[in-house]
Image (cartoon, rainbow, N blue to C red; front, side, top):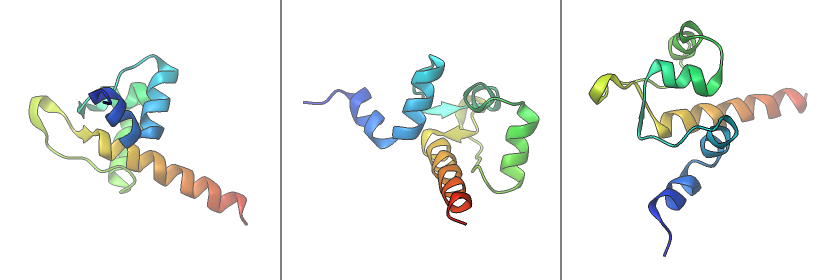
Length: 88
């Protein structure tokens, strides 16, 4: 049988790969500071992604703002935009 972390890794392949590269672990809930550490830049940059509708944000327990699903969707959207630019 698969362990829980293996099943989560298959659900979030882009996020899991990025976290591994940065030496971070998968969490259920992320704060702005976590997103900054994952994606680089600043908290202000992450806030701009939210304002622009590129990154979904919520009001989660313990001050969290993002779910793993939100970060994976952001990464998927980033890949699609890059693919679209190359296809032109």
